[in-house]
Amino acid sequence: MSKKSKETSKRKLIDYRIFAPSLLIVILITIPFSMYETKSLNLLNSIFDKIVEMFTWGYIWYAIILVIAALYLSFSKYGNVVLGDPTEKPRFTLFEYSSILIAMGLGSTIMRTGMVQWASVANDPPAGVGAGTTEALMWGNSYSMFLWSFQVFAIFVMAAPAMAYILHVRKKPFMRISEACRTIFGDKFTDGVGGKVLDVIFLVSILSGAAVTLGLGAPIVTYNLSELFNIELSFGLTLGVTIIWVFLFSLSAYLGIERGIKRLSTFNMYLAGAFALFVIIAGPGIFILNYFTDSVRFLLSNYVNMSLYTNSLDMEGSSHIESYTVFWFAYSATWAMLHSVFAAKISRGRTIKEMILTYLLAPTLISWVATGVLGGLGVHRYLTGAVPVLETVKEDSMAAIPQILSSLPISTIAITVFIIVATIFLTTTLDSTTYTIASYTGTENMSKAEPSKTLRIIVAAIITVIALILMRIGGLAPLEVLSGLMGIPIIVIQFLTIYAAKKMMDEDQAWLTNVRKDKSMQQNK
Figure: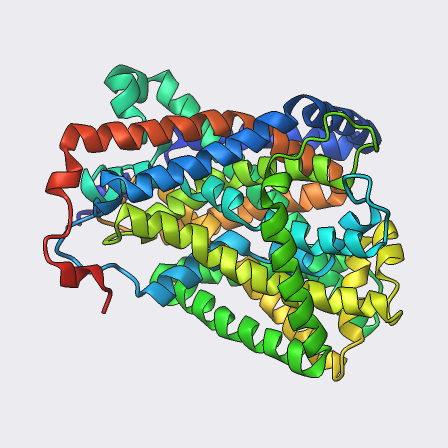
């Protein structure tokens, strides 16, 4: 490459037309929070309450419709469409592919919700159930499993068919929402202001979502470090943990999918499995297995109830479930486009059915097991009086996690492994984020090349700064509302991409021209 070409390449590292406005919007959102903390919290709390009041029904039906759309694309003629050359093998083995999707889909959040989410429900159960009762405890763990079920993973994956199709089948150079919607709106809209608006909404959503995740993930580690080394919780400790995370996910993103994300994801699956076995063997294993079985039974018996619960009559008063379900689906919507773009990138050689069903089933299975083990341990410690989990969660839910882990034999090892698993989970989530943003904002042909390593590091630094500002504000309320607000436009874009995927495959008759001819290729060897 000539010197002139190299200079041109450097100048065009980032598409500033979408990156600069997105970053500016995020800055304009976060700075007022840090300057006027109390007023911001009050304002955002009132906005969030209004969202719950007005849109509980909307978020519930949104998630259900996406599950229906997922099943339709999977089991109709579109499900057999190969995302790439029909004769090539999938890029990753099924285990590697599932591990990457699990690490991306669950992240460190499963370590928090699995351990203590049941207690928030048990303290404030639905349907007039008494707090702390047997039925409240059953609602608690089952609801925690429900949070990591088909609706949330349908939210994560259902923009992926369109993104994967434009990248691996139509070989478009840019893996962007605007490009996926070109078939709907035409060239003038896509190449003009309309397309840029769609891409800016996507980037603002991802940047905010990444900062939210880092903000929620840090306490999972800092609280346990404080317990392990008997040190005080402080912003300095959070800053130190964040810097280590930045280094880890920057390094992993720099190494790329093959050498970084894939290896970390598969390694963490083995480590998390070993930790679960340790908890069962060293802890109350029989109780955990029995309680897990009861939790699955209760979940399956009440799955429709949980899926459609709005408490419209409000005769027994509102409960934790109504507001948290809205937050959870809104938070998932904020992350939806990121998950879909990344899933699209790693799904070359997979069929649409394989991509969707793997994302629906593999993370759901693992999350149910994780919730069964971690939640079962917490419930047992509460029932035996070893840890006052319900009382602790009322004051600070994160504080209950090291208390529960400290009740295990060889607690130092238990807490250490828990920290490592949580750290790797968050690392794989955030390095996937930096990789995706770099892919999205870069100017290289994404159907042929990987995103710039320099750009990945720049993105990692930006996410860190935003996250530290948000963490400095304190409290979950601002993060909840930001997620809810950003999720609203993303919902509209998601439905557009689903329609776009169907329209593109219809135009190409892809169910005839881009399917596997040799059945032996359907198995990944």
